[in-house]
Image (cartoon, rainbow, N blue to C red):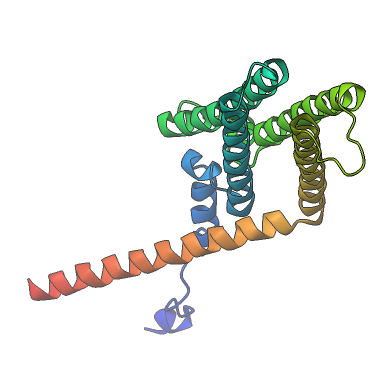
Length: 226
């Protein structure tokens, strides 16, 4: 029929469907479980720092408490107890973050960004711990210089050495926390962190697409078999 010949060919002119990659990206961004692992490099760095603080403060506190004698009971007891409490506080924060993550009781993105490893809570814990170490070390150094000033040719006393170690460790923690905050702000402004998250989402998208292709091939094979 001539009327049928005048109609445009419809083969291959399929309606444009929704963007599959965009849909998978939005679905992945809505997964609360993935919010805890959005920045794996930051999480690993802060977790390693937390482990170092727990081991350093805990072992230092136990060493001071175990070496307490009647001649140096006051400052060893005070410094050792402070170090043990700081180690316990850092450990408690890590346990609480893990418990909240496992229970999945927090579903707010802003709160997860604060509580997760590498978030604001870790930065504050390291900063407060460093400041406490600086104050404790400065107090020990002041007492050592006032009452037990080291003389030339004489070995430094334990109080002086402990004060120097605590002051150096606390100062390193405070400076490291400041550098960490500055680098994180710089990366967020330049967009490097966002590009890393986009690459991670692309990996999940490609993996999901391959899984779907595998399912379709398996289904078609079963259908042919039947």
